[in-house]
Amino acid sequence: MKKFLSLLTIIFFINVNAQNSYFPSKGNWETKSPEFFKYDSKKLSKAIDFVIKTQNNGDKDLRVEILKGFSSEPYHSIKGPTKKRGATNGLIIKDGYIIASWGDTKRVDMTFSVTKSYLSAVAGVAIDEKLIKSENDLVSDYLWDKTFDGNMNSKISWEHLLNQSSDWFGNLFGINHWEDRPDTSKTLDDWRSEAQREPGTYYKYNDVRVNVLSYSLLNIFREPLPKVLKNYIMDPIGASDSWRWYGYEKSWINLDGLMVQSVSGGGHNGGGVFINSEDHARFGLLYLNNGMWGDKRIISEDWIKKSITPSQTNPEYGYMWWINSEQGEDYLRTDWKNVPTNIYYGAGFGGNYVVVIPDENIVVVGRWLGRDKIGTFIQMILESK
Image 1: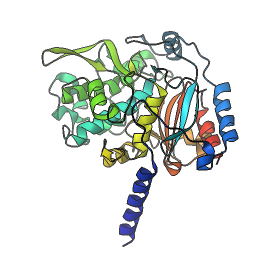
Image 2: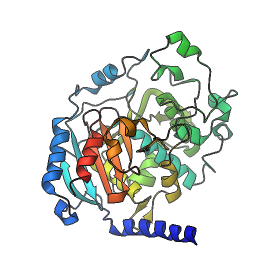
Image 3: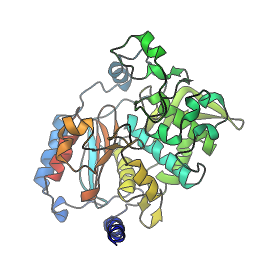
Image 4: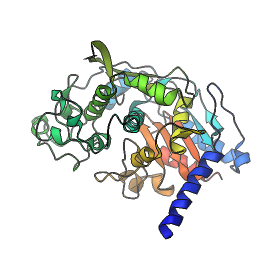
């Protein structure tokens, strides 16, 4: 009986969330005053002033900033497109309505590793469409090329790629797995010769392995992933036509006789999703409402839940979404410990964020925020009520 009542409570909460949310049509977005939802305008303005004053003041030429930010990596270079960025901007969305914003929220900019959360959503589409039977399936059962050859690589599942515990070994589009974010306490020779770990036992944030996921999904869909994202997600939620998703100059593959670009999961070497804050906010609103957009199911609720479930190898990481886990390093060392632990977010280099706050039915998008300022910003928003 208790389990039955708990299930009813969850269903009721999800339905109330969906019913209380407004879903903006394409090209339109209604606003309401913070006071309508019992938030203090002055306190929200103070929170926004905080992120403006502490914004990322790095080089606006992101080619320069990328090379500087990853200068410790051997052979790191720009392999895909970049774009000069603007100043900080963002939105605070409550029940689907804009209650506060700052800067140019229609400006298209690189978003770096927030791209990974979009890639996760595309993987969810593959599951929902039954192109992949289960995220626990071995990827080698779906791809017959040499990408997953070898004793360890052949054991990698889709889930291992999604939660960054695959420890895939190899070279993809001219980049070796060991080149990405090396352990600087070791020599280069040690890093090159490090033994491969059993898939699912070791977490390592690694864009080469994320790009292996992108490449694998391209082979499953057999059409460009930007087209999949557009048709299944971005168009149904009313996103603008201004966003783009790029790969590298050498990431083109022959797919059924046509040259198709395998897109990247971030802008670490250039590429990734280029998008404005308002489209980010729509994507966050979709997740806030458990994959529903109005009365239309876009992504399965089951996939949303799995995406924000802590991984065994990293309690603050799910399927390419960060989670405010009490066991996570960010929670323990930053202001994240002052906000609810069910908050989850996409995060990218340079201070790019899409934050979902389920308890308050809020989505926060921030671009080019100062380093380690997002936790404080979220705390200030919640304290404005």
